Image (tube, rainbow, N blue to C red; front, side, top):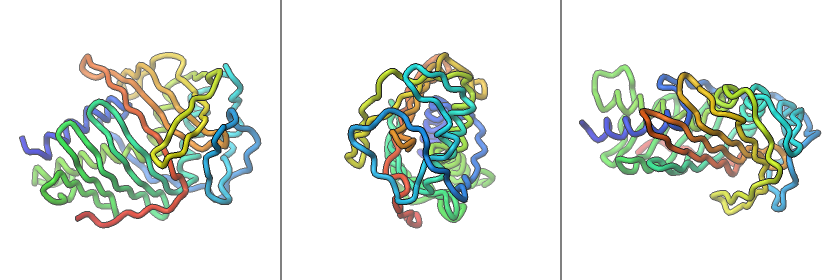
Length: 264
């Protein structure tokens, strides 16, 4: 097995454990033409999260009751996080798990693109999705991803890249959250320190019971929002082939400029 094939299989397992289907169909995320003014918010933040000028929470979020102990439907919560993330246009995130970790920067406008450095069970990789082309570099130089290629390395790079890109696609986050019918708001906020050094007081909303997404058993799932409805992160634990794994994502610098450079 080539090194590229090895980390592809590791990526597949990690992504399935994070709550993604084996055959995702990522979509570009549209930025709303105008975001409504916030009228409701989660619990107050001790350290406010800086937000870009003119950003305000979408009505998909502000209509949700986030008083302690309140129940939220998955459809409501999924629509909220999908719209809120895409409305920022750009951002960064950290990913951490037993065999997957690293940082990714992404943008949704004018086109969906992302780039990052990840540590997998088979070692570090660099991943770039730019101008509609996926590139994977596992230490021997960038390989152009093409799932339809007859070259095994290019084919594996293409499959792996498409799997990794779902971490940055808000449509997947929204779909996953909607798969759980009922969620409950925690009685007290959590304090979360982000990669940029900000400490955020975040409202925690937890799935009320295990659920299934594309036949994948998800044992538990949590999402966090800051007081202005800025998405802070998520954490999911799921089972695959008799084992379970937990993947945590934290978003930061949402709406701030990002640089995505050509691979190599």
